[in-house]
Image (cartoon, rainbow, N blue to C red; front, side):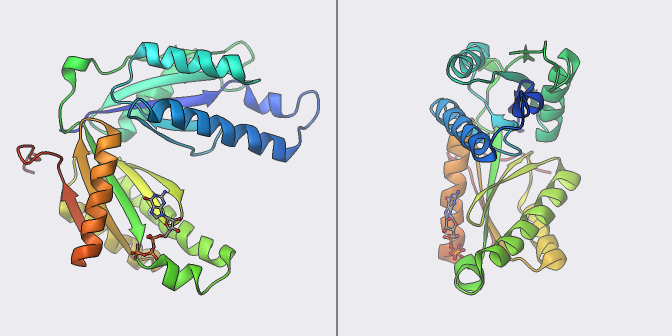
Length: 263
Ligand SMILES: Nc1nc2c(ncn2[C@@H]2O[C@H](COP(=O)(O)OP(=O)(O)OP(=O)(O)O)[C@@H](O)[C@H]2O)c(=O)[nH]1
């Protein structure tokens, strides 16, 4: 069974800051947001986690393997180097969306995102080391079939982007509603989904749904492991296996003795 630890990263009081004492230059805000994301990706990535930029003022991190002191250090390091601070909510659950709900509730209880007094909150508890198992994370790496031939080499960048974004919107909604999985666009034609335990049939039907809905053809490699970095890497290898075999779904576990539970 999966057990996903998610951390919601929220910039404290960011809305008011962006317009105080008057609206700040947009490219300065974009620079701050992308540098903050890069720093968080480096910090969390070096501890075998993943961060997704989502809306930039709020980001979602998969943090299995990071404990409370790692989260405190993240807050301290950002607070020391940026004009803004971050609050963190942590949730652990077999269902990714339920883990995010727990993480979110912890922050919302502490106050509003635009509350000047709510700063550097750390809410929630992490998964204890002894509770970790080799199937805690199921990560799906989706990729559009021949995006280069169909879009990049044929259409202007904006029209290519519309196709890719429509595929993403259709997939993220389907996986969220049917399975409580969380999907994140990571650039190019790639989407990474943090999934509960799902079988091949569920991935196949998600791919069919997106093709029927918006005409975008996907394939997916799925990896299972005890941290997101390993599960994500296994998923990338599984995706290469799809390319090699001409299949649309490949699921790989890191060790032959690790099997997924039967439905
Ligand atoms: N974030 C991320 N982006 C990738 C990765 N691999 C490829 N990309 C991006 O995806 C774009 C398209 O590359 P591919 O998916 O390999 O090319 P394709 O034309 O769709 O070909 P097939 O996937 O083989 O059907 C590249 O230009 C990159 O921007 C990856 O592992 N992670």
